[in-house]
Image 1 (tube, helix red, strand yellow):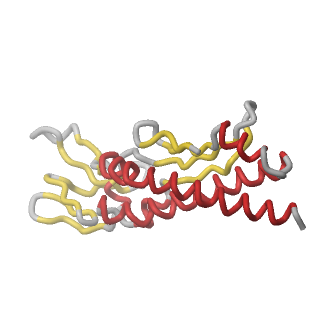
Image 2: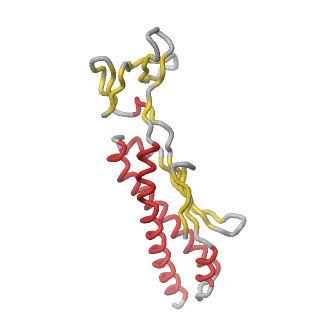
Image 3: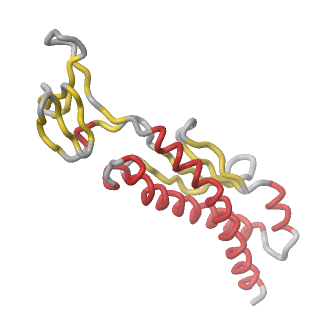
Length: 187
């Protein structure tokens, strides 16, 4: 059982390796039952990873859970051509637009959004009707730069901490599902 990927790739990939499958084949389980065990174990572990990320990331980044929940997506386990079942948890690690946070308003010589302060920032409405926080890049009126918050380093720390726990969780769930399928097969 392996969990690969991370912030560098933008997603975590969960797979059950071939030697684990061969160990399952030695039991009385049918190939369909083995596939059921694999996909259920991977799906449950991916959901566990997503919930743990959403639990730990708000305190690590200072960004509300509601904003982060839209960025972390789970893809259900699917059988590939090589007959290996894998699932994915996509990590939305691109910078978050400052307007996605609570609008704190203008403060001194900048702008507050959530707990973040943007020096020289101001709120402006664009031609499309959308509102964003900008800051001037020079003393002139233009050019201006849209303000955002980089979240890849806190994500990386949390993901590194979670991978060993997730591997143990995947092994535990697989054992539970195998015992359930064995009990079901012997009835």
